[in-house]
Image (cartoon, rainbow, N blue to C red; front, side, top):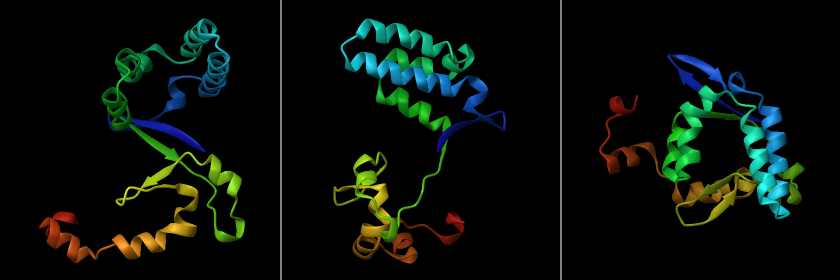
Amino acid sequence: MATYIFVEKGEIVPVTRYGNVDKFVETVKKIYEDASKGNKNKAKLRLVRALSNIKFSFLRKYVWRVLKEASYEALGDLQRKSILVSAMHFMDPYNFDLERIQRCVIHYAVPDGRIIPFCTMNSIHRSEIEKRLGISISEWQERHKVEVSAVA
């Protein structure tokens, strides 16, 4: 489960207030299918139809720059204006599912350079990583010269 919310004038606004998310996602799947089959023009026409499921004010305010520039900077700015709210079934050793791990799309980047699937982090990797890379709060504060009152 995942959705986005935006904070506007101190109010939380769900992305669903800006359009029909289900129809948009359904159309985006068809765009992907068309593009994968080499039907680029058909995919572009579907994209225009997909955008019709979203209010123009949302496109102008949040998405236009991403579409116009197609840059990581523009995408990053959009992400900083939104909050992702998500939930997933937690995988423990007793319900470990290799197929699900292979499809996992959320990953941790670990300081030693490894990329670890979220689905395996807690059940396999967390204790080893924390043991090897973890530090106490007081050590972190000393390294970063932060006072307790500044953190609280």
